[in-house]
Image (cartoon, rainbow, N blue to C red):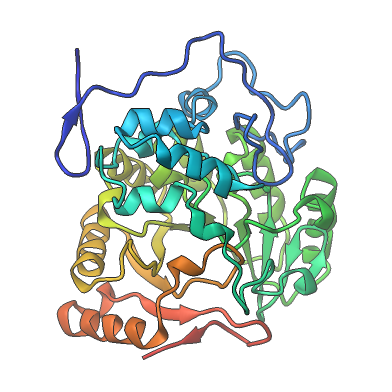
Length: 382
């Protein structure tokens, strides 16, 4: 039997896929429920309503996405974890269930409940704790909606929520409680958002976010990009995505060709928090994006028990640079309900950042920031 090599160099058989008889279901407006299996989200149905299943002949990434692990028992079996973690995960997940692609699981060290990649995806009982100051909308994005699906907080740019769906449910996600459907995230909402962008010449940059905007299939994503760059006042596009890390097969040749053919500059911001997330498949995805001549940046979140140590942060920056990505932001985590166990004190964050500045070249040091509602920009620490 062939084997694969995990992040810690442990050789093990590749994870088996479910039998072909396992059905797939459409993606919901927000995070998929436990009985769903996400597929590509067509732009004319970005909320993934009934009938949004990927057609026969789907790309490899779409097929892989339908096989994502969403059953805690299966995850524990694949990783050799105590079954007690599965029961805990079921209780803790609530309306934000387990969801993780198999390609990302292959980077996790088997048998280690404290693996930093596992900590990011496995629901734990701490998510049920309630703490003062930890709320559903910590960035007050609902109050910053300029149009359906369009968030406008900072001068000169606006953020378009393309879909509420993701390929992975990161347990620290600051939009895990966001009511996507209630804010017009979908095809009709996107049309209204594009009209609002066209009517405001001060918007020079459009940021595509979600969910994850790359869950839209190639054809419809290309259509969306061309509709945006056709607006004369838009000078550049920025795409925020975790898929090159958690589902690297999503970076197709067609996607690369679309990006390289745009008449405006494009910036792709990937999201990696730990050097172990960046294996050969992720490096290949980044190389495909680099071939499209886009600017490649990374934003990470500083997470307790994941990357809150100087050696890990140094290794992350070094690995990013090795594959051609510039470290951009190191975010202090947003205080969304259910995520307090990931919090890192500001004093610790500043100390770690100071260590980075003393260890790395200046261009290798990400900016340490926190997003504060009402501020004109992200608040930087030094």
